[in-house]
Length: 504
Image 1: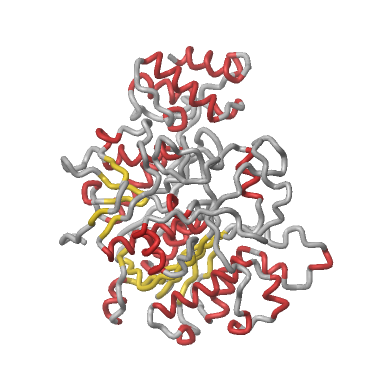
Image 2: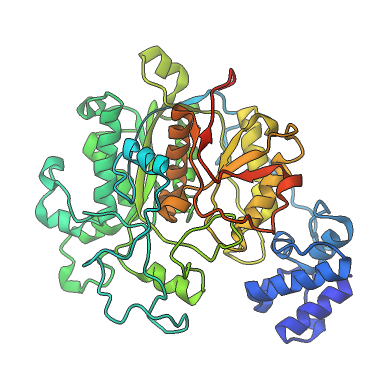
């Protein structure tokens, strides 16, 4: 099997078989996703198994893939016999507390700005209840679109789709309200402005007068990308405000400065997981006593077309301009904008203070793929590990869950990898006749990037409170690359009741 794979990989890469290192990721030889899928199909034909688009991504090396083909997906991971196992750490890892983190975390408020006029949680729920798709053409005046659109994915400097989930009025900002001069406001990335306004609203929606938090141990954890705002500004534009106005690190600090908050102020950029990692860090900080309140979330604005242009080169954008998670019709990502923040508090403190508890965070986990099939390629086994870790910290079993709000970006490879990871974790423990319901807010809004995780959290809190699972749009025929029946999964194709039970 290993010899066959070495020969097949060498042929696909156009290299001598002797140069194929069986312990290195196959993609390092320059194979693209389509070639990897073809390799997986050939392997399935050889073994007589159903073609699995995610197999080559879950097992990135020749050695690992051969073991999985011979012994099943649970085969031992690839290891080099000549490399000694790493020594266990001599002391506690710096990033983690020395013991288990205890205590439930309450969400006591939330605020948001999302496409389709969803400028608050109530409007977002209305959009979900109506089953609306908020994806549109690029708003007039947002970018200079002359010559930007080209149906040819190879045309440099162009995009074959400009559709997305766009906000309106991103240039509107009440600078005097926050004591910011017009000159400084102009130099501020609109993402910073949006986060500042949404943070203020989040605090107010908790029934807290923002000024009363001055001097408090309140943390700020936000997920944010560099938007590219003023990146092309000439040296004559550097007036002393552009540096702080454009630096993502300042976004959390500006909120803390404006409200007088003295807990940690942390900006996180872990790509699409940014706002979820921010939420995880905030919950941990509350649990270990680092702060007593925490704002957590993220924001993304498409102030330049570079994301559309870059993903056009990768053929990663949806040509149809429609996000279809877990569907056989899925054809790519649809970019979107948004901002979401939640206010967190230790559950015991929230109950003591009479706060309205919208939902409770029982546990969370963070990990990384390590060496996968490529720098940006998803890893099914890594997703399985983080799901199991989150369940463990929450003290829950897979069968306890009714629903998972997924990443679900509408890509032909990413969705099946995620679906298979969910099936492996939740499928074996599902009660008969009760498959795990999954959905994706991206089917309504598009992919809000650094805000995507918190958007899904806000959607789920709303679903809990309304006792309804909204439809995941454009589901159509589910992708054949997930074993839906044996995996115990189903896509929520139409809105359905989600009644409370004693556990909830």
